Image 1 (spheres, rainbow, N blue to C red):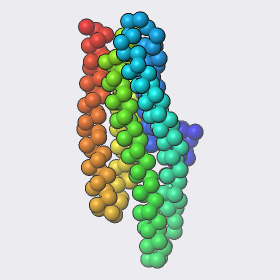
Image 2 (cartoon, rainbow, N blue to C red):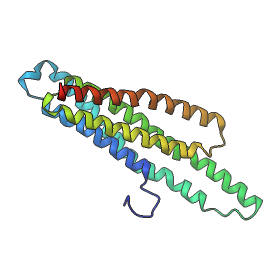
Image 3 (cartoon, rainbow, N blue to C red):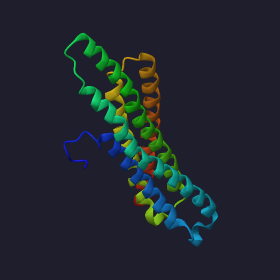
Image 4 (cartoon, rainbow, N blue to C red):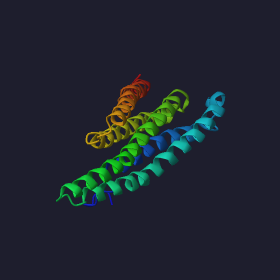
Length: 197
C-alpha cells in the first residue's frame, strides 16, 4: 500500500498511476463525444484517439508494476554490507547496475505522460464542450505525473557513475519536461478560456 513504510510502491508508480488517470479523463471526453450529431465530423478522429489513449493507459498501468520491480534490486543493493573495501566494491557495482533499471522506468513514465498530453491536446480541440473541464484536469494530472517521474529519474542519476548515460538521460528528460510542461499549461489555459469565455 502506498502509505506504508515499504519503499514500493512509491513516487514513480504513483506518478504512472496519476498519468493513467489523466489519460482516462481524456478518454471519457472522447466517449462522451461519440455519437453526438454536433461532433459527427470528428467522429472517426475521436475513435482513433480512443484507441491511442487506451494504449497509453495500458502502458502507464504496466509501468506502475514495472517501477516497483525495477526499484527492488536497487533497495537490495543499498542493504549490501560495506564493511571492507571488497564489500564496498561489490556493493557499488551492484548498486550501479540496479540504478540503470530504476532510472529507465521513470523515464518511460515521463515519455508516456508526454504521449498522454499530445492526445489530451487533441481531445481539447475536438471533444465535446460539456466535458472540456476534464481535458484540463487530465492535462494537469499528466503534468504532475511527468514532474513526479522527473524527480524519480534525478534521484537515481544523481548517484550514477556512468557520466555518458547520465548526461543522455537527463538531456532527454529535461527536453521532455520543458516542452510538455508548457503544453500542459497551454491546454489548461485554453480549457479555462473555453469555460469562462
